[in-house]
Length: 235
Ligand code: PGA
Image 1 (cartoon, rainbow, N blue to C red):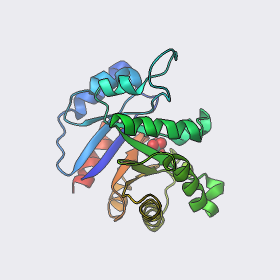
Image 2: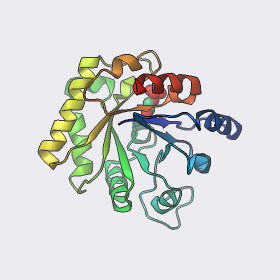
Image 3: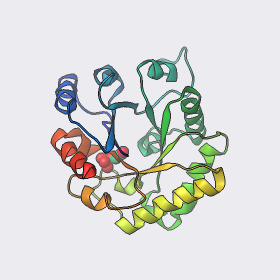
């Protein structure tokens, strides 16, 4: 079962997101799990449907006086099953630290929500990619005993740029991640790819053996494009 994660980021107005949800609500899938991660105000529009609900973030504290934040308990009570953690936009633009990411992954595991941990190198870091990925994995997993985690490999230079690594590069990197986690943390993990996925390149991506799913930003905002992507993954 492959997973298709639709990350809406900070997009869509109330009317747009309602129309979007109505369009996709009854789209049947057999071979993949659809996971929608809308902006916080719209979580309830996606609750209790055929597909799964995900969140784009969570606070690093459990509950209490933290204006503007959304807690793990609140997300759990909304039936959120997945939380994207450590997205590069949060790491780089919003200055989220490795320590916050580690705590957030720990909260997910404590509350039985699956973290989708995003890792990836910047353009200028491509020649030391494994070192970057290793550091992003170790800083989170060393202190957490993992039971259930999805790792989303998203090269930062591929996010929203239209640029994408070759199939061979993606396969090698995802295989490296799986092996690294198996050898060092004695557990298996699913690996997603993210970065400029669209209805044109999904066929190529879908042939990569180590891909367990997709984290899609821009293309997932267009229901017709998303349906084409789903159709390819469904086969
Ligand atoms: P993109 O975003 O598909 O627009 O490149 C992916 C992501 O940031 O998760």
